Image (tube, rainbow, N blue to C red; front, side, top):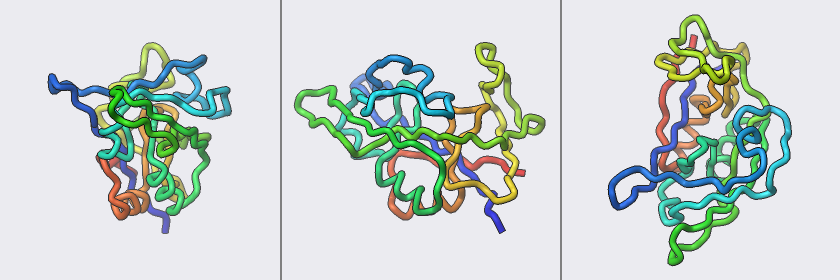
Length: 194
């Protein structure tokens, strides 16, 4: 019987400035940055490596860094754990973290931007409580209650939905696999499924 247990994976804000305010990693701008990873489900040109400026010392605390673009950036070990649970259509684009501080090292080849080629059509518009975006009427914003419909074969290990592309979802089995490897710096938020 397929599992219908799902969690939203949310990165914790993982860097703090001396003032105590959260600081996020900043993705170095490139052409078409706004459309390459956000909602596209087909290949788009992008740099072979995405550069991000961050407090690299803080990376030891997280497998999913918090960035200024809300892209799902995950550690290689987190991606490998998800894939051991089951395949999902994606592209893993390498990330090179450049240090904000000259005394800290850069960190290449340990993280990837996770691009999903398929977005599941499982968003229950009738039971969810949300408002549509005024900018993009196909995209939900300010979701107060998120309800997903369980597909007949259950959920893949990781997926996204077109109405809320800023969310990364994992199955219950994937959550357990991530906890087994001691994944760091993320919260699993249960999602209501019917």
